Length: 220
Image (cartoon, rainbow, N blue to C red; front, side, top):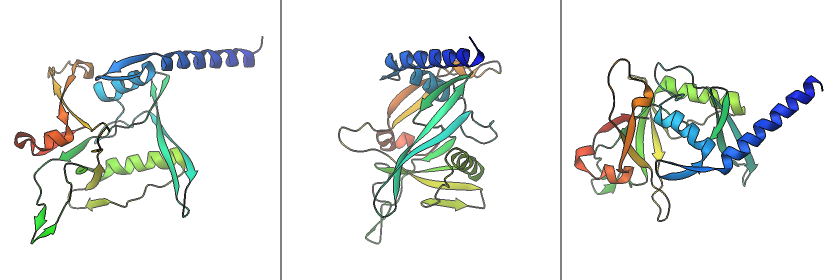
């Protein structure tokens, strides 16, 4: 048996293990997901590892995209993200970023003209440092060869922030984005990220309707 045979057997063993992990389902925050996806979700969103943020190390994640041609020379596709978690490569449909979500009340009409229609129901403003967005854009370019459009992004050069219109699902039968808060947090210097747990207080739309939560929230 040569080295190539050993490598092929190791690769096949890894594929078999991945297939087994993907066939088993477990619960993560009330949702059934594959065992492998749950590992990545816990790593990124429970332990708050490998997400894009101010003065954080570069995330160990690779971007890729599958595209198909549409009409009028427009291409459509989905972005995929592969995380390297201690040598185990796990795929997710998500990335995590440090952002501020603006749930402060907005003027919806001015002099009889509608403004910010459906704010808090189908979209909200999220703010993040320009450097964080630049880092995400560089990951997209490296992983896919494509540039990120700046359409819909508003820059504030005085504060080095960008504002993005984040769309939210609000259709009947579609899951709405959840709003989770940290609980039982150990604030001691020796505490690890794994000491944190989270509690769901409602959808973003529900939280937006509650006066006690109508401010700018910082989170992931």
